[in-house]
Image (cartoon, rainbow, N blue to C red; front, side, top):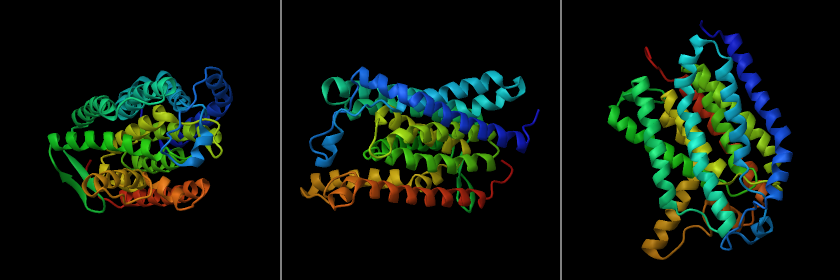
Length: 338
């Protein structure tokens, strides 16, 4: 049975709305549970002084939308007719697996931070991220027989299976860390991620991956519900459980569509945040001078006097425009017979 356009639209909207409502209903009780368990964020002393007021704000909020997405993914899988399961699982298993696997790593990191005031070392997290990334890249390459990537406006460029796996693994790890670096202001990471997932939902539909679009809708609905509680002043913080997992899942979605090269466009904020940290660290090690007053970039803007809400909203606007640009480029790119 082929999924017609009307059914796809209804399912996608239904999943998005279900994720949003479920997240809203569960959000309040979940935040109260975090408070009762005293799972509060430890704020770094070297960060902006204004952020010290956030000390003790409930963290591990990412588990809220991870739980919502996992539930809806499982529900759709159970309700699907058998002839659609063979399409649903391959299209969504890597993004869903990345959300869960990297989410577990992030949750452990958040709990360690709560208990000891510092998280897992970056290189240790990188090992687990790399394992998940390589596993996901191998599955995508082998199941879909991917040996190339789509260049916007041009078409497919053959790079070979090994090169694709290397590129895919790099994309998953770097996007995971990029979203995590962006998660430094109330609502910042959540809002920018929503626009990126929306962009790739449309790209997935254009590429003939309807169930991938449904997965994106679940993430968007769940994160929007989380933002209800996370916008300034935040009642709960996403934490590494949410930020690391969202980045890995977003990159996985992009890789399944074949438009990995659009990921830096739709996720321009994550790229810039990553680069700001790399430039800051590199400049200090080589010249003993800093380029920015503070890194990542959103902290530099705060140091220049921008209010937190202004930084967040302007980054949202950039993410929205970037998401539209990425979707338009995908629609304008010839995909041949694939």
